[in-house]
Image (cartoon, rainbow, N blue to C red):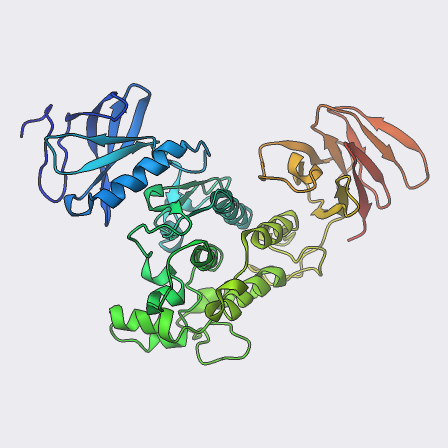
Length: 457
């Protein structure tokens, strides 16, 4: 078929450049070029009345009535969460043997998670802070999806993209998501699937509980650069075929740091990355990984929920401290002892700590923020149970005194004045743009019931 017409063109490049198609809403779209292909079909960049977007076009053998029904449900839901490239409209042509859907186009500054394992230069800007932020944003994205009663069913490193600079995320391939309890015709990606799905247990089906296992695997990959079940047992496998994977991830899964089972520990000299990263991980995160990959392997109800991951990751992000010897960022246990720097081995000097409480209920929410220079207090810190962490909404920033080295203050970046009470009992107002000196014992009233006390290390 010539360019500029509707066309099918074999297994790859099914649509020709310049092909004109029509959405179910009657909008005309024009195919520009092929972006890539996967197990379900191909993705094209297309021109639409709303601008440049992406079109996922299914391989004909997968374009069945069930997939059409799923797409209709997703499009009708019209979910506007900006963390998801949600299906917007279906595209089908009578002259073609398949169909597809239009979604937003992924910006170039979002990269896939395997780029971390490849040490791709494109993600060299990633830091411990941006990776923890990526993990937190990923958890909150799936929490939002699950709260709608929708299971994703194929959480894997191929479906989540991240910005290595600030940790923003985009979830793609959302046509796998269906309402909990409904069939989607997909069980997931083998090494991310819950063991009961890998084994094919009677009654086992993809859903929110199996998503929790897949999410934990994804988080482990993100923070550890390794699979949680790939230890000594994986190195004994000569051919990683389907049978071997089923044993490793379903029949006999063993967490590499299972406290009671040591036969699958990482092997020094062969799996050194995960040995080092696990040693640098704060205990609060180690405990969550250990629970979900020991008790949670056998009992889906024991898997760590998104809210637990959210709270722990948020607390760890607030506790990140730089090493004054080499300048590297270190993940610290919230309100815990000083860690040893993962890079140079020096014990990290802990800065002052801001003990912040907020909320108006009988059980107020408490958070601890390490007051490194450049650390920020965000609007979500002042909310008892924030729906979403927003790291673009800073209300306070730790800044250096312009004339006294080593002296820090908290600059008011909010639109309202703060009330500050010093340890000697004196009070002062700190309007927007002004700075409160940070000394132990200082109390800051930040508005709407939120207050904070500066504590010793």
